[in-house]
Image 1 (cartoon, one colour):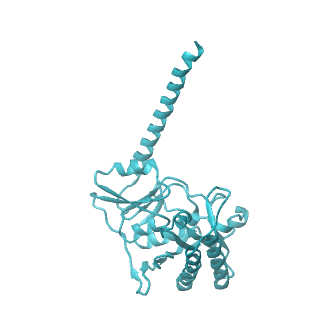
Image 2 (cartoon, one colour):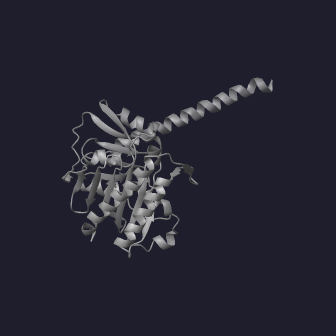
Image 3 (tube, one colour):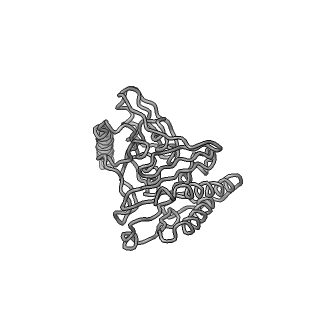
Length: 293
């Protein structure tokens, strides 16, 4: 079933990208969601386009989108198969007008993404995959070509990093490798860098939502890599009331035990936090003495 849906879903992602480009080409307003993340009319235009298209394509399948996420888990828990959508991944990049935002559409079956489409509206590039069918990149006007992760031999490590959400933990992770390069990128494009062998890893320590990763996970896995939690277990979807992902790593070369570096980065961050807290308490105590005198 998933393979037959791939071509029409890719077309739907491109159509949503066109709606986004229409807004991108002019001035637009920015609202704020309850979680203080930005929302533009492009998010809603893409959401409405995708929602209508998926209902035509597969009316029997429910749709969970970032812009319609208030569905109780009691209802979601009954879903065996459903669409998981981020109509505009990288709204902050959209607002900055740097082109690093995507349309993400995934089909999830039994907690696992089995189809993934990522479309880049500004460049027109699409990444897509279907379980068991490999991963592909298609440039505008070109033929789809297979993409693959690359092996890492322990030398220079290329790390994809978030442009809008840098973290001290990531810098500690990177510092564990004597030879390294950080490539900053927005949205699910970081995972695509790993999938097509242009980066070795992407590590996310901060919070993300399930619609941020599902399509990318399918693409990365079919390219030969993994999108896993810090115990190197593939992420699962719709298994709990919260739609927040755990911290995760996108890795191209699965032969390495990335856990030791992840733990070292986390432990270093915790130790520094404890030290800062101790210094602050010591400073507060030192400052209180003269005041009492």
